[in-house]
Length: 175
Image (cartoon, rainbow, N blue to C red; front, top):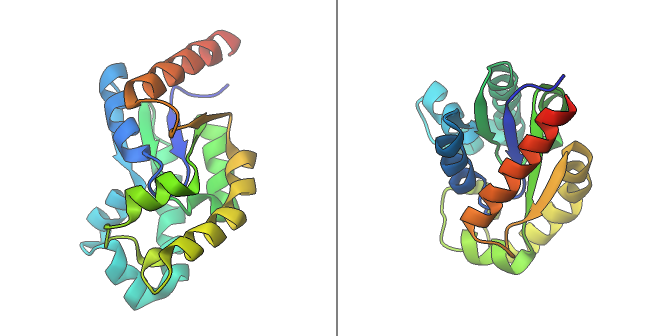
């Protein structure tokens, strides 16, 4: 039986943190953002972790945090965009809660991440090309892990939350 946890996955800029915060308030659940938790645990920001430990060092920390957070009950978790890369993360998300893939097209993602300097994978000469490559690599993993997919480019935050609440209700009836 799945727990009452709701896990939001998807690319950077899809709206996981925004939706997650409001959804948690609406359901009176505790909200976590795995990237923020990593920063809180290490005392440094993610770009510095990438600089000092590389992506692999960051992913190791991410696996530990997601394992810890997904074992909690009654939470909404917004994961980092690359959380699905690691099989352990996908396994823990799939088996410990309702997984919602917040999908957005490249145009929306580029617009939403364009000025954000806290995204180490998009720093460089051609962030759009990098984001397209990331999406090609990760899209199948998002789909594999997801119980449901919601296109955030088509709906307001409130409409997305309403959809998730309906999905959660159905899920609870099935379990």
